[in-house]
Length: 85
Image (cartoon, rainbow, N blue to C red; front, side, top):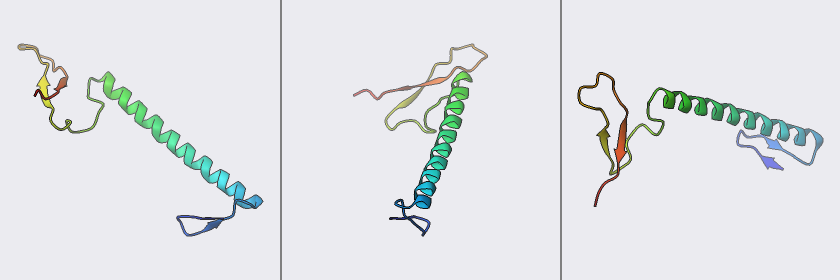
């Protein structure tokens, strides 16, 4: 007997309960797979466009080092440099 977060009870020992449990698991797996595919595609698009694929902010203690060359008209990506001690 499983008490669901939504307030219901699901008895996996019965035919209907087992079926509903498997269906709910399959739906959750499908949603997780769909989200994973979307995130992977977005990371790939960002990498191909030259944008960072990590988090929105720089890691604590790291400095932004521009890799732009003087006189270049195009913008090169920036990189992270670890703090020196």
